[in-house]
Amino acid sequence: MDYYTIEGHCAAEEIIKKSQFIVNCFHVENESQVEEILKSIQKEHYKATHNCYAYVLGMQKEIQKYNDDGEPSGTAGKPILESILHNDLTNILIIVTRYFGGIKLGAGGLVRAYSGTATLGINQSTHVKMQYSSLMEISCEYTNLGKIKDYLAKNEIKEEEAIYDDKVRIHVYIPISEEEKLQGDLVELTNDQVGVCKIREEYVKQVVRWSGGRVVSKN
Image (cartoon, rainbow, N blue to C red; front, side):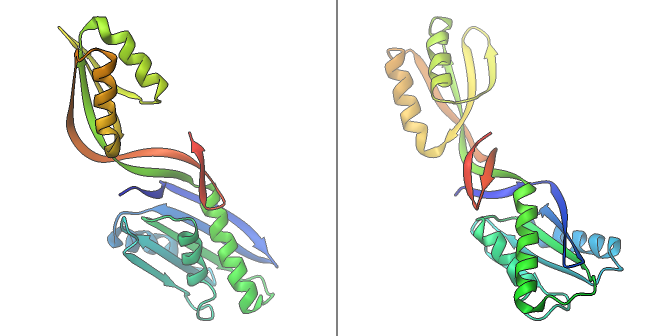
């Protein structure tokens, strides 16, 4: 199953009615990482009025948690969580820190502020698609190498490694659903003068452009 997440860490901030809102978005793999990062941010911003957060973990978003950290119930952590889910992301922690500026925002204003700041951080993060893929090995004679390279380029299949020996062995990642097509196409292209085998299955990271909760294009 493929899923979307962010890469590394991204921070941004904005001022809303004199309150400073700072968002920190982190890629996380487990709750131990979440706890460690939370402690670090809370220590860094110990003078802040609130450090509200939400996180989602698991390929199917099995773990979803949030915390309002003293803001009225449902006005901070939940909007952050909803921003994560709206953008179809997992394995992500978002912390929104607030330094109160003297003007109360009201319940609706708080929801908009925390949701908007979380979305600001999401939009500025590097988004990746984790695609469950097959690492395939293509082996061929040198006489068929040009045809195969042209085929790979035309189908936007990236060569991960090429080994030049008595034969050429090329390693590529493809979606699992494309295995039979790859083999069939190359057999036809080379008149059955090719070997195609699977080495292993694993998740492959693919950076994507993101806008409004959806993928715009691959980078």
